[in-house]
Every structure is written in C-alpha cells, then in structure tokens.
Image 1: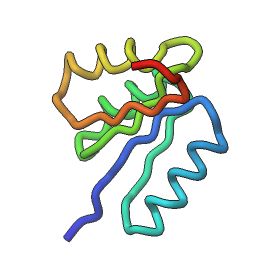
Image 2 (image 1 turned 135 degrees about the vertical axis):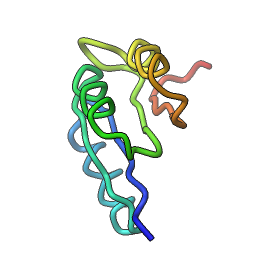
Image 3 (image 1 turned 180 degrees about the vertical axis):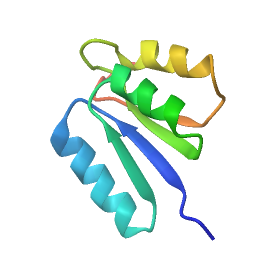
Length: 87
C-alpha cells in the first residue's frame, strides 16, 4: 500500500518541520510549501495529495485565498491551522 501524501502549507519553517517530522514518523509522505502560491503550484502538479494542512495567516496569499483557488480544482480535505483565537 502506498503512503498517504500530505501537503503542508505554512510560512513558518519551524512549524512545517514540526508537522513534517511528526507525520513522517507515522509513515506519511509530506510535501512542504512556504506560501499559498507555492502550495497551489505543488498541489496542481501532484494529483496524489490526499490532505492539505493550511496555515491561515501567510504573506502573499493567505490561507483563505489559497483554499479558494484549491477549491476551483479539487475537494481534497483541508485542515486549517491558525494561532488566531476567534472562529
């Protein structure tokens, strides 16, 4: 069985590393993007991504804008990551 491929989109390198290390130890394949534009490029070029972990607050293209673009192509599950305290 192939490992599940997860895309982590976050502008914080330490957060990407933390998430990647945890998921890789569980057997997942983890791809990383440091902003929304890069994340969209990776997602559209790799049709095997099964889940996206997406930061909300990023420069260039925030998480909501990134999700809007991704939804034009796919209904892949997305988990939004944020340090914000409001819903």
